[in-house]
Image (cartoon, rainbow, N blue to C red; front, side, top):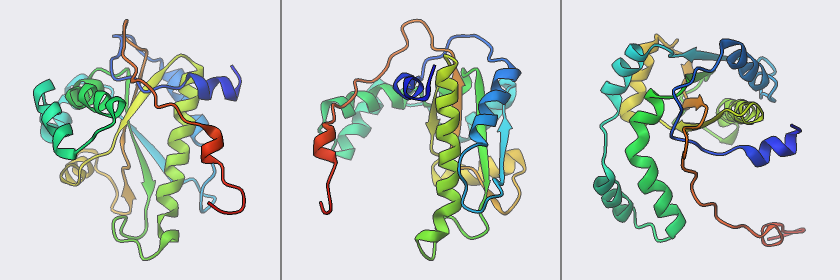
Length: 208
């Protein structure tokens, strides 16, 4: 599968089959992540793997309160979302926040060095470390897709960050941008309807 095929194949999956992702493949995916460009040339990235179900439960029980379909619909309405495909995606996704992390073949916490306060950047350049780890994460998602493995990310709420840091003994100068759940899709796993985008409408020559 070439890179364009991997990009086209990549999709967000929240329903995983009870199938192991081999450590050999996990390492191959992480190695692809480590090929991403980085702001300081050092690639100061680490990857915490939570592979034991008991360990996952111990963390997730502290940070995620399950929400049902009715609650998800209420949240979407409070957000004022009007696009039907966007609403449909969130109504499906919100109730799966716990299960998608718990049931994934791989639950990874990417970690990146962040020498200055992440949420109080003094300028745009202060976010370079944050931007770089997301390049790494996208590389991993594409490498996974090339292997028939798909995933989903969850950005932690502010209330989760302290708990996550303590749980994995994260060094003071490191941050966790997201949970990254990877695995083989369950039979009938749902993919959200995609918004159709006109390439010509998104390209601006010289000015907007």
